[in-house]
Amino acid sequence: MIKNIVFDMGNVILRWNPEYIASRLSNNLDEQKIIIKELFNSEQWQMLDQGTISLDEALQQIYLITDGQYHDLLKYSLYHWYDYLEVFDDMVPLVKELKQQGYKIYLLSNCGLQIKDYFHKVTAFKYFDDFYVSAYNHLLKPDLQIYKHFLTKFNLKAKECIFIDDILVNVEGANKVGMKGYLYDGDINHLKSFLKKSL
Image 1 (cartoon, rainbow, N blue to C red):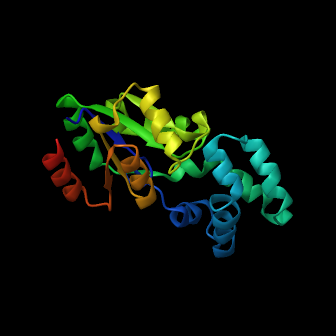
Image 2 (tube, rainbow, N blue to C red):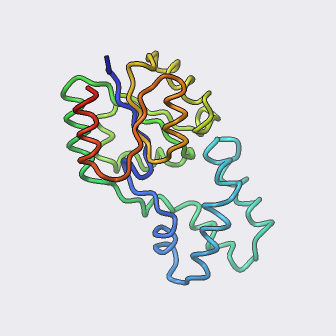
């Protein structure tokens, strides 16, 4: 019997689109490419998500491999990228309904420490019971250990959890530990149909 609904964040609860965010951080196409390549697609970004490096340490490492003319841009982008995230408003009624039906609602997301500063802007999160942010736990999806640690941390049984993510390998990881994974493609009606059949 399902008791818990576990949501990923990026492209499930809110829009994660590096190209769009870069376009809001700069009007210059070359600068946008730099932001995407040297920040969002960098090894340092992964390390931030895993919580193994600080923002200042990441910035200093990025400086070493980028042209000095872009340093101010990259610094601003690192500290302000989440200002340009967009919340999916249509997810709020669904989360609220699930909560009212008695299900526990959780977040399990790969993201850095600074994302917590953004949580107050996400209406859906007021219905969540708890949050598992990768950087605080030094693990990343789809490593099976992150799912196991999540379950242990919140004292949950895998067979009682549905996990919703937009990345296939992350869903497969959840399935491997016994959770019921759902690959979210942005169609909330498909998700509602899946939940109706599964709950």
